Amino acid sequence: MPLFDATPSITNDAHQIAHAGFVRLQKAIMAIIVGPEEADHIPSAASPAEVDSAADLLRNTTPHPDIVNVSLPQTGDAQLHVDQIVNAGCTFGSFRRGYEAFGEEDNFRSAGNHGPSKRADAMLTALRNGHRIAVIDGIDGTNQMAAMGNRSGCAVCVFLYDPKSITRFGACIITGDGFAFRSDGRSVEFAVYNFTAPNADLEWRVLSDTHVLETRFMDRPHGVMPAGKRSTMKIAQSYLDADPNSNYITPLGGNPGLMNALVCSGSLWGYQPEAWAWDHIGAFFLAALGLSVLAGTDTEPLSPEEIGDRILTSLVRGEKMAPMFMGKTNDLALEIQRHLCTILGL
Image (cartoon, rainbow, N blue to C red):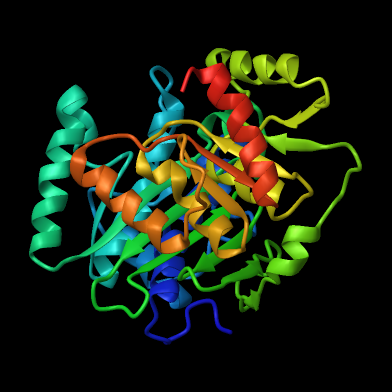
C-alpha cells in the first residue's frame, strides 16, 4: 500500500496527519544530533515532497519554516520548542485533510489555566457545527526522547472524529523508531518505516489480537507504567512495595510506553495516570486489540467507541480523563487497578 494511498478512510486521514508530524520529528532528532544544516542531508523517514503534500505545504508556509531552517533555542525550554515544531506539522496536515485541530500545543496553551475552558468552548462550537475534529499530541514522551535518548519512548499521536464516518473515530500512532499503528476501533493495522529508503511504500498488516494477547517475552510478571519523574517514580515504587509478587516494571509513560510494552513487547498490564485526552489515545488501540481497559474505579472494560466518546467528552468539559488500567486479561487489569487505586486513594 502506498505511503499516501487515495483510499478515503478515516484511518488513512489519521496516518497522513501523523506522518506530517513524524517528518518533522525525524528532522528534529537529526538537528539535535548533527545540527540543523546537516540534518537535511541525512537519509531518514522525512519523506520527499512528491509523496508528502502536508510536509510540502509546511515548507512553503512562511510562519512555519521547515525544521532544517529552525535552530533550537540556546535558552528556555528546547523540548517545548520541538513539540511545537512537530505539532505544526500535524496541525497543517489536519487542515489539509479538513479537520479542526486541538491538542497539547494548540493556540489555547498560551491561555494558561484558562486554556482548557477556552479549548472546550471552541471544540463544542466545532462539534455543534458538524466539523471534523483532530486531537493531536505532536510528541508524546518528549522527556523520554530527548532527556533519556529513547526514541522508542516518544510518538506522534493523532485521534480523529468524523460524524459522517461509519466508525466515527480513527487514530494513528507513530513511535520515534518508526513503528506505525492505525485503527478505526474495529481492527489495528501495523507498518514499519524504512529509514534507509524514504521512498518505500508502507506495507500495512492487520495485527492479530490473539497473537498480541498471548505474546510473552519474559517469564517474569511485569507491566508498564511511567516512572521517569519524581511523582511517577514514587507511585511505581509504592506499587512494587505493595505487591510482593512484582519485581519488574517497564518504566515508560504515555502512549508510546503502552504501545511499545503491551503490543511490541511482552508486558502483561499497563497504567496511564489521570491525564488530558490526548494522553489516552493508546487505550483506544489496546481496546481494539482485545485488551481489558478499565477507567478509574469502574470494573467494566471499555470498548474502543466508549474510549473515543470519553476523549471527546473530557475535552468539551475541559477536564482530564480518569486513570486507566490495561491488562492482557481482565483479571490482570482488575488486579493492577486494585493495587494502584489503593495507592492513589481512589
